[in-house]
Length: 127
Image (cartoon, rainbow, N blue to C red; front, side, top):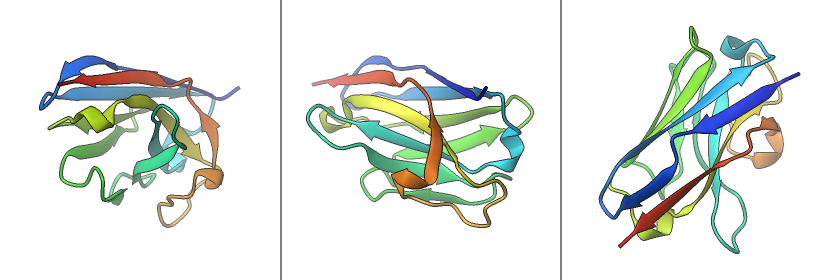
């Protein structure tokens, strides 16, 4: 049974930082690209960042490029999202997800290509 468990969310002031973690179990973590998404109030779930299964390739949405950094530790079965210079519009529930296909040669942004999802962690940025 695959489980993805996010942690690290919370309340932070504008300009602050948070680091989210996503601990995976029940899958060969090192074989899967991983992604981070978020869903704000009244909005659709949007792609933020993805990292390849070896960790050598990353891709970011324009909205977070230069502020967020995705990384992974395959020895710990964990993917991270370092978020800096947070803005009020970053307020959302943040989700990690695993690619549906192992050893995919390139990272993907389409939500439908990810099959397992965590329960989400709330990030609230106050001005």
